[in-house]
Picture 1 (cartoon, rainbow, N blue to C red):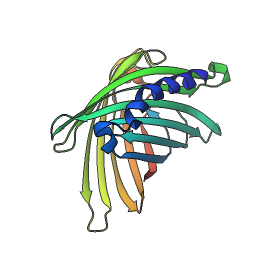
Picture 2 (picture 1 turned 90 degrees about the vertical axis):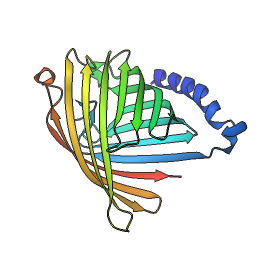
Picture 3 (picture 1 turned 60 degrees about the vertical axis):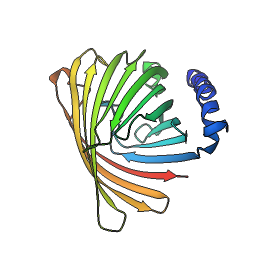
Picture 4 (picture 1 turned 135 degrees about the horizontal axis):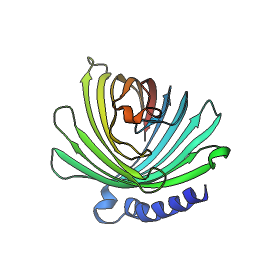
Amino acid sequence: MSRLFGFTLVALSLVLPAVMTPTGATAQTPLSVSAELPLKSRYLFAGIPFSTGWVQQAQLSVNRGGFTVYGFTTFDFDLTEISEADIYADFYRQVSPQVGIYVGGAFYNFDFGPDAGGWQGTPELYAGMVLATALNPSLLIAHDFDLGDGTHALVSLSHSIPAGESGVTVEFGGNLDYNWEYWTSASGFSYGDVSAGLGIPLGQVTLSPKFVLQRRLSDDFTGWISDDEVFVVTAAFTF
């Protein structure tokens, strides 16, 4: 965990001064804090199963302008302990009314258990693009420099439909991931998924029950990407 602590200090020292210092236009930009508490029937990261059963995750983010710093943890109910603790930060900019881009860096820490070396950390850089068009397509490209030692590209689509005047929305989404030896020796389209859910506003909290159906797309990834149905309920808080 010392590597996580060191990376945390570096990330905060680089990003927080730009986010928090009240100078010029930055002083007019409000600070926002948000938290998410997703409960998942199984934890899949870039198509890779990191749990065999239910997990409770927590994410806290602090944003000012285009800068955001995140902290993230995973509690594994089968292991009855925290199995992951991450820190990452990124910068987002709207370059036109239809196009937004972002770049960021992360340091992921996973507990692989005492027989596999315990806590181990790995750094990653990522960048992406978001389009404000039909289905809100987005692209994420991430490269892991150590444990994952590879690259993956994720294309996502999403669509929201208001359900009357209640504020409830019906949410649809989909993802397609291409893997270049990211946490594996194989390359190719690793998985795809489709999802359907609801956005239910309850004051400052939004409940988001969602059903995700994921499918492995290549036999090259047999053994670490399985065909799974994942149920997610997220409580999102914004301050």
